[in-house]
Length: 189
Image 1 (cartoon, rainbow, N blue to C red):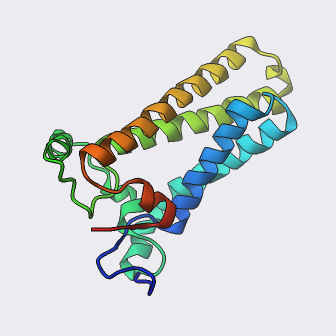
Image 2: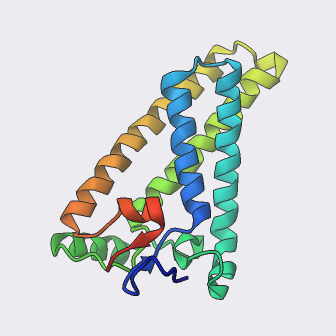
Image 3: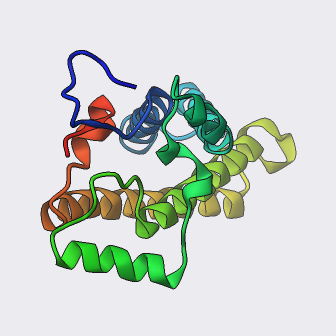
């Protein structure tokens, strides 16, 4: 997927679906955690948008390999078929970071995939508990449900902090661009 504005040495890492879902989730999380009041209309709307974005990303994780083969829309990096959580994958990633040589053709590392799974689980859990509290009359005002929802939001916030710190640390220590590809889709070799 070469564009005239990119040098031939650039690698297309993140397609527009992945970037849209990522930054949309950033916006909905910031909106719900820091800006709007919990339980209000805009909080609900942002929550529904987040669940929609997560659903799109999960679907894309299963479908993108098919589209990547045609090289028209996706990259292979978005596909869940690339998940490798074997001990060897973790060891290789740590070794790459130590050597300051993470291969430029890599998408998510095994730690990144674990974070993705945690974020998907937490956001879906927040969506389900939020829906239950607002749309099921018998659950409205349920303090246990509110507590679970609140704890999941706080754990998600902790995951966000770890994610941001890890991106900058790995980018520096591994000598690889991580922020640029999530903004533009492209990574320089």
